[in-house]
Length: 233
Image (tube, rainbow, N blue to C red):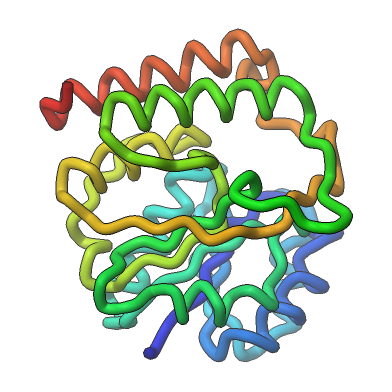
């Protein structure tokens, strides 16, 4: 299977080189979406001549970066797309296993940090775990899914489904759009257990989203909007 691994990146000068070196061990084709970084990220990316880069002139958001990755994979006709974050939370060695799990009967393989326990798992920040639990339960109830982790960015998508998504949410709520649209499209989803790693527990979402109450309300607003847009119950 010819697949692309894509990383959304914003101001990751301190992490990106080490992460890319590991990703390259397990993926022949690698894309970075440099989402308006203002630090030395672009300089670090220039060190890797084998790397594909899409650059956003300004910071558009996590969801917008993934939308660019979807479009790139579609234009290059990849059989599959793997998405992985650049902050060290995901282990690149698992990329081939996600691809192996993307059988002809599966459309999306979604990493789950809560499907199984792994030795050395981190303790997630309390507000992040609470919001994840609440939204995952609401998604399952509304969409008839059986997810354990609605917000893990480590995923594998079958290439043929990428053009079916209509991503409008530019920020961190974008996975909610993915789940609603995947359910509406009848896509086949499996979860894959991945370690729970938090290297920077105080890492910022940015702006008002750093407030847990606001973040939960925003996520619910996006979920309700998407449910209405696709006429889900």
